[in-house]
Length: 63
Picture 1 (tube, one colour):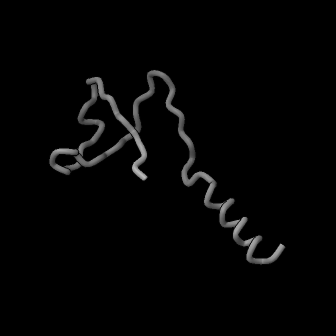
Picture 2: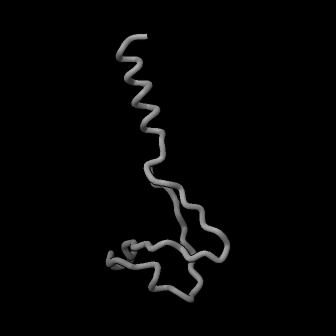
């Protein structure tokens, strides 16, 4: 194998590693702090603003 091939394989391997520790939510556990822009105004909304209310958070990819 050439140095270029080994470097490419190493780069792909490193890119596939998770960037943060995975935290799995358990039933009854609070959702972590999250601030996202509003779809209507673009102003930041905190998930804490909806505490005590039911929230549907639709997560999708847009690539």
